Length: 216
Picture 1 (tube, rainbow, N blue to C red):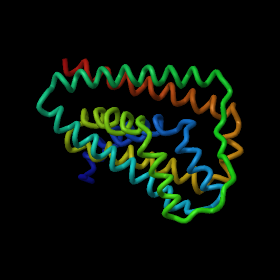
Picture 2: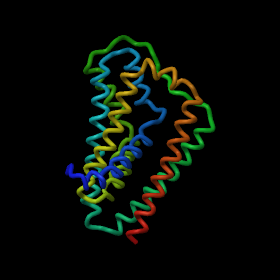
Picture 3: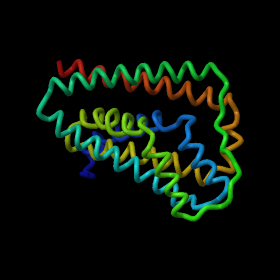
């Protein structure tokens, strides 16, 4: 990635878009987040779990962006179609997040069970991460297709932003578990978070729609 001053001015919005998109998709009540939170509360192999989950996301995001960029480079029509589909998906995702904000919910880490070795814990992390079909829809298809819309010199910045969001989220969830667990157990906190996610997804959908229409 080029670190020249002019490039940095262009890269920052792309980095931020990748960061916001990844956070909006990853911050949700689900099995993987509950598992990372549980390991953090138990203080068992937290660093290994955080690193595995973050690296898995980074590899899937990179593969998605690079693969999509290669496919879209030869088909502008497909690029526009995927951009419009991505905008529609983000709009619906945002609407669902805003709808969730109206209902009480909480993230709770199930306790119990004997302590496991690092290998067994990483096997569980791999199952929660890679056996979830939504992870491929989110990272490879959705994030990949949006990242591939960026100019080639800036695609690395988009990947960096999306990967940084994943690393930051899992690190906060694992290492800050004892402080965050009571907060995540409050339905009101998730209402606020879902509302912010919904508005962010709508903003990203609008930017993607503008990009698609500009290519028409």
